[in-house]
View (cartoon, rainbow, N blue to C red):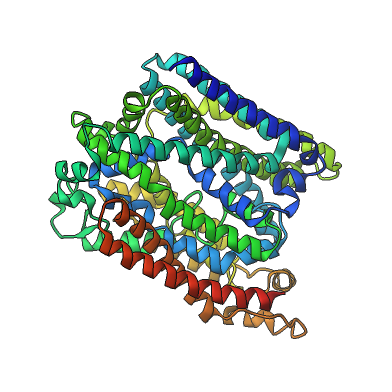
Amino acid sequence: MAFVDYLIIIAYFIFSFTIAIIYSKRAGKNTNEFFLSGRNLPWYLAGLSMVATTFAADTPLAVTELVARNGISGNWIWWNFVFGGLLTVFFFARLWRRAGIMTEVEFAEIRYSGKPARFLRGFRAIYLGLFMNVIIMGWVNKAMISILNGMFDVPEESVIIYVFSAMLIVAIYSALSGLWGVVVTDAVQFVIAMTGSIILAVYVIESPQVGGILGLKSQLPGFVFDFFPKISTESAELGKVLALTPTMFIAYIGIQWWASWYPGAEPGGGGYVAQRMMSAKNEKHSLLATLFFQIAHYALRPWPWILVGLAALVIYPEISQENARMGYIFAMRDFLPIGIKGLLVAAFFAAYMSTIATQLNWGTSYVVNDFYRRFVNKNKNEKHYVKIARLTTLILMIVSILVTFLINRISGAWEFILECGAGLGLVLILRWYWWRINAWSEISAMITPFVLLPIVKYFGVEFPNSLFYLVIGTTIIWLVVTFITKPTDENVLVEFYRRVYPGGKLWKKISDKVPELKVNQIGFGKMFLNWFMGVVLVYSSLFGIGSLILGDYSKSLLYIFLTLVSLMVILINLKADFKLLE
């Protein structure tokens, strides 16, 4: 890189620190400001922060790998989460905001009762906030190391110093500024990251080796450009095109999105997505933030990455499928001019830092609010807990660095996490809408997949077919456990219903005990209609943009028409809903 490239990167880091300093005083007031921005985030900031967080340094690389293996349709491994994401928008965003809690795991003690509820809260705080969190940050660190290593062709030992220095900067500004600083930097980081990704796609597609979209289409087989997977019983075709057997298709489209827990796509919402919903100004902003997130996450972001992934197949045919993700890095290295190269490196640092910043703040909220404050030191003032939060942020950073050295490869991580959370999703959904779900339901649903997974693997069942056995087995176990254990204490259920009033016939036993609670309820029929139209909106936007880019204008017009119709229906319904809630 040239001197101007380094100036761009340095300017970016200075900007990040400036925001941290600006918001440090506000974040230091109390934990509500530090972890939830005082519950005053506008929808656009909350939504942009969600999108920026899911744009990790390894995301473009992962998409490049999927495209190299199975063409555009290979992305259905994560596109299928649209169904669950829109369920969160219309069924759960309002409920999370009404709950009035600080973290997702605090939910355990407002919904369940007794020692099981306390155990579940403490266990999930450490399991998610520490264990899973540092593993995720370790993967992100590993991806950033791979990017810089491939970009500059320098020893990994030297690159590690750069990455960990960046992480230290993130930890410091996260510790100083809390969630306000995180979401404001997220918004700018997302703009930088997307601008860089688009510029790279233009340079690579218009290169002499590719020759524009027409040149790209002339040099690759037609099936690579298919948006939809092929349904086939000929499994030998796998690896050439995303040919799903009927059972695999059902696993992806019919099971995975609602049955498996996955960070950022939890059924019913959860993790940092729930944190942003709970940070929103009100229920309206919570819903709009989540809707914006789903549209931007699935429809707007992927195409620059997909185009570079397709172009890499033409430019770097010698790269093996196992190492296909390096095509994106090599494209950055080989095609960007001075100045733009610095912008792209800054963009990847932005993607990396937005993810790490959120993981640090979110993980710290669990450790401090749901473990330290709940079980270790209950009666300190807010200043004390803010100090502990800042210290915990730095500790999580150090632990994640140590974990990074233990991770040898990133591939297969998606499948492993989905299998470990298979069957938990239905509990996470029903706990809002069925009074009989108790703490033991959730505990058993968390543990069972870990018991069943080695057995399933022993018999040679691979992902995604493994989901059938894991989901069915886990569901049977948690249902049995639910009915052989005591229900949640009735007083707790009544108080929960008063606070959240989710509605529905599965709460009738409890709602009958509070006849004085008269609230305007949005009908489930309308929520299902909004969910269906939301799914149409996201997919039609995704495929409409793709068709336009690839020059298929007739299909693009059809998809855009569906986008406009679905958006109009949703906005009309939401206008009536928001008026009802006023």
